[in-house]
Image (cartoon, rainbow, N blue to C red; front, side, top):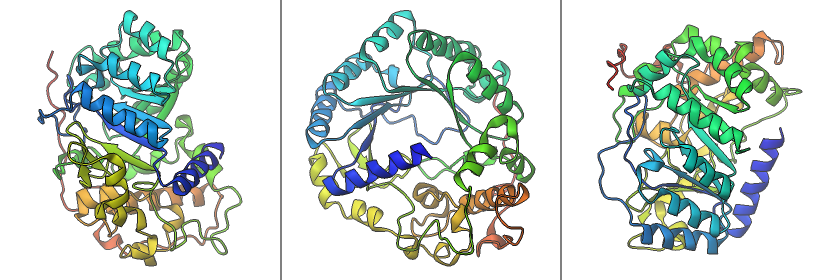
Length: 387
């Protein structure tokens, strides 16, 4: 509940000031892993120079952006990664870093301790090294990531295990949550696997099937049911609308923005909608004048076809990016969000948090594949691990 109120306050601040609260800066597409679920492309070579990165961060700081998330690909694939972090620290940003941990040795952990990032998210896919390594397709990756987490935690740096939940790792998620607690890390679980930013939908075949999605929202060992119930305590669907039609479903383009390695600006790092390029325009100009940014930030539930008449909006965590990438229409429903909304609602009803009469299905349900495939069927096999 506290996090939700804090996020609301940040959004209100951004709205009043006319700037984003948080900017995600993807400084490279390169990665030394080839994770089976990854939504990014890794073959783009055009990266901003350090001088360009520095100029952009300086403008963001002058505008009053508070939080800067630095990521890749793998962030530390850049030789100047430490230099970028130091400059972000000197500019006064609250820094969040996303990494596999592969390149965090003792010396780099000491450096990170010196700049005190707000949070370091490390991609950990399982409590089982075998399952984790099958996701990254690199043998030994689990040990390297776990050791990196231990080094940071030993230096009192807040670490979060960032975990997309798939068919291949759902069985070990409870153990992973226990492992993160034992090490002193936080745990972030995401049950939505999306298509790639280039509109390739191959990763969606890794999604949890209907049975395991229900388990995801009901398995007490993961902490997900407790988190969901806390958000809906005292909620009465008969006289309260958690998603009013006049509200926006997403913070993209309002409190957040994203910058790609070549300087393209998106409303969010999960929403591949080019709003301008920082080699041609300032960030402020793109933020204030881009028609794509304006269209994103002004979209309301009332503008989204089918969502605007769906009785499950109370339970929906719709994503503009997923709708665009998978259904090719940002102002339309995300079928995977529909599937999750039903599963979340059912878990709340089964646990007695909401009335038994909550049984309505979304208007899209005849197009929703219960195993999350929607427009495509089948399953993908995990690739052979390479060294």
